[in-house]
Image (cartoon, rainbow, N blue to C red; front, side, top):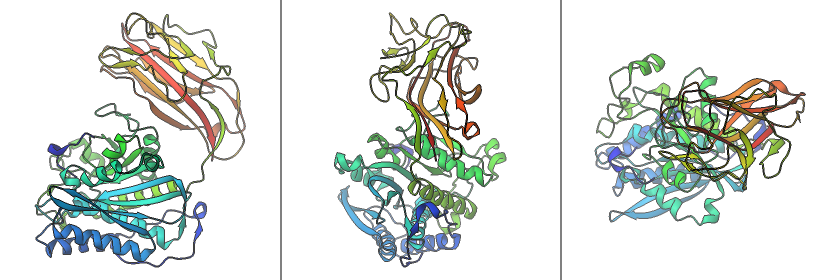
Length: 495
């Protein structure tokens, strides 16, 4: 992972086995022994080449050739992409697994370079090894994914995301549009590890805001894996310090995991994950001691398994069938204040073409996720941001009846935002209910929150076989607070 000062604008060869359908395959358990074998190779390469694997140094090219040789032997179509930075030639290793929809690409990447001070075994031999071993497992199992799988190892990340930026910026627009998601893994074996997942939906409400639409789904897949093994996770911001940056700048959904760098583990985090409070997650960050001794085997193993889970879950999944959807471009029977109990005096929900408002940042968006219309709390801008915001209570709007099929996994998803001034509190809210049950909620807070489209998804399989209505509520029940909300592209799918 590159240093904060450089923040930018945004094992073993394996034969190809007989293919099996992706939908029948479970994600494999990634071998810790194989991961450590890759790390030993990176350590040896550094030791034989001046102690590092940095851009423009022989240790980097040797690392790239090692990764490429593994992938070539496994049946990948590989490219050693060259670029120039600081007068030196850099290299990206790009590996495509045959098959899958070429117009629907899932990319998985990690930076391969170290700083000049050391061999970079955690930063980022750990992510490089985990992505490499996952790719080799794709080959071992002969995976036939629904999506096209592309793996990447980036050069010169430590100098400002140079390799990944070169790759993204030099893709024709039509090719960039085919990449539907990018997963980044940078430092996944920190010795005093935390378990962080990039905050795709901005549910933490801090820092850079949400990733492009689809990032929340990538985040959720990784969160679900760690939840399945009983490991709690916390969000980490898209702060521009790793190779997701150029993808986000190009509007490509992104996600990934991170076990911590030079930041200090708090007492609360030590209680959550173990380890030592008051010490850096990686005390050898960007130092010569970042060797094979600087790896937490448990964290590395768990994160590698999470990568495999994401590749198998996202890359091999059959797209869910759409049961019902509404983009609000035509009136389909949504009813405002359906039970006559709303108390808001202004800013009631309505369908229409919204007008933008601003107060210390965007508060009502004048743009929708799709088309010209959305659901919005008081669509007019008025003379000021507070002219048509929600005031003095709750406003609600309800869908027409929706008949759900029996069986399968049913999910409701929607694009949404809740914006408020620093005069808000947790008494204000945005809420989604299905037949009276709350399935999603965002509370206000005493801090400024600008409007930005996010996505939310909730499992509603419990309602299978029933006729349901979706109720969307928003409230300003804090004294004199500025609150706005919007909704677009509501959808129910069945897997």
